[in-house]
Amino acid sequence: MNNRVAGGLFLLLGTLWGSSFVAIEVGLPYFPPLHFAALRYYLAGLIVLGYAVVSTDYWRPRTRTDLALVGIAGSLLIGGHHAFLYLGQEHVPGAVASIVISLGPVLTALFATGLFGDHISKLGLVGFALGFVGVGLVAQPDPNALFSSDVVGVGIIFVASACFALGAVLTRPFSSDIPARTLQAWAMLLGAGLLHLTGMLTNESFAAIRWTGTAIGSLVYLAVISGAAAFLIYFELLSRFGPTQINLIGYLEPVSATLLSWLFLEKLIDPLTALGFVSIFAGFALIKRRALGELVSSVGR
Image 1 (cartoon, rainbow, N blue to C red):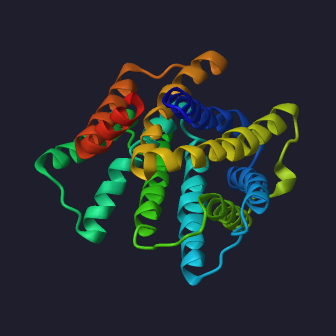
Image 2 (image 1 turned 45 degrees about the horizontal axis):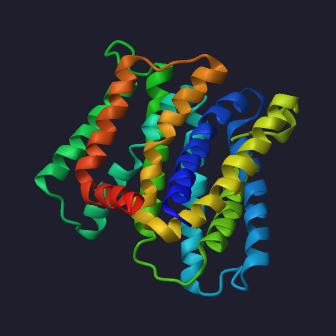
């Protein structure tokens, strides 16, 4: 894979994952949120598992470490993250949700510091502050309406971002040869099952789904295009850039989500929300300035 192809795939992946926030926004009126997320990952997980079966003989977990990784990824990276994301997007637009989710790498560094004692420089502390200021700018809380729908939605999506960050940190101590596609497939299926179970416990029903063309289109897009296909691109890029650099894709997602919201839904974020994204990215850039520099250098070579 040459540099131009790798750079193009990097941009494509950011666009596909950013578009998922818009597709969720389009589909939510037709689905109970947790069952919507569960259906997406049942389908995506089966597709990725099929790819694992035909591409490697290591297509299922073999060790306790493998099972631990699947358990963490399935419960936090897929289950917890998407439960709160879909619930939060009932209150805020997809573009806003994508900006709050972009706080994830900042929270990852924060959890790594608290759980594993990672060193944080003074610039890193400034980065943490900028990240949380950015979320405040996105939420724009009114002292007279602290429990407004927008503020509640941002808060729920903040929890989604925290679930993903915590899951990413908790997988760090484990060393396994399990291929990424195998791990992702089983994590998707486990996460889908947990989302399904949680939906049942909260009285969601598949009978409430309205199977319109728009509903089917959004589900298929989320499962096949921004789900399975996007993860296959991710696997290719992961071996080239490594996990730290590839996480920078999270900062392309809000740009993609905002542009697509404008093109298809005629929605634009306000200036304060845009400033919030800039603040979150600035915070990340201070915390992970070396990783950012390495990515730029690797693409430029």
